[in-house]
Image (cartoon, rainbow, N blue to C red; front, side, top):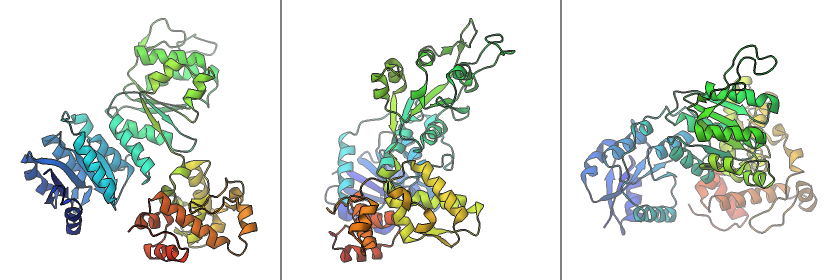
Length: 463
């Protein structure tokens, strides 16, 4: 029987795991990182489930020690206090998975089976991959499954000195991801420079990137290095790469292939040691089909692809982000609101957010300045007008899709109940019927959620 080690300071957690896994595995227990060490000498130990946060300890330190002694041993991290930084660091330290409590039993069993089936000896982690910056280095937020997958890709690719292509709509945080890749790489001591290829005229973009020699053109009274040389030893982030002129794409391709460039007016090349991370809000494949982007450059950039989901597809993160931005901008109005009413939270969840996270922050910043009460109300958010032009509201329980105007016409006198039922049904669907996660997503208590489930005769959700 395979042995599984549970590392958690809470005894009820150990009891739960023994009840769930005890028939299939020999379940071992450790209540601290120190108690893990003797078990590492047991060659029969097949997998470790490790809590991130324990009193006076950092689970990532324990993970690092496990990987130092037993690099082939799979470790699944667990936490009730998820953060992007922890997820990325855990993945960089070679954790198999990063799970958020409460755990789904069926998913956990399937994951353990999958990990054990693919288990193969792994080389020891390098020192550069273990020596990571502090946990406050990258301010990214998101508990959704989609963002957890993004963090895993960042963790696995950050320390590898390869090009990365980040795609996603405007406002989804592509530069934040680029900065995370730099922060958790071996180039962290070098510069991180960003340039928006769509914001600089074509006539200036070439000199900005590659630099120029004295006399290269009228006005070039002295030589000047470009962004590639300024980023030497670090990372250069090329935002909106899809808008780069086709002729400059050929020059960029040469830099990627030869690791050298020619300044404008230069006769000799200059060596460059720079990691390239590119991003676009367009479809690269479509750009290639229309002849606006070189296919060979695309393959050079697309070694690792990170696709950022729009905010409307990660609804469980909206409340988390809204709370963060409210606290962040509170300093501009210390007498302003410190929380959201239930109606305001529902309005935030229902809004389509075409501008994504950037739009959400702008709305909250404006609200903090203008709101008068201790909590943000639906009226304070001033989002209703935008919702009139939103896509049809579709209820997963089978209720018809309606625009906001149609909703008021057809559900007169019952608008709030209709909307509340819709939001609760959607939250339950997104969280796979998990009441704890659905309540957290909605910003209400679990007791209130249970009451609404009963009131609206929604199918029973899991605890």
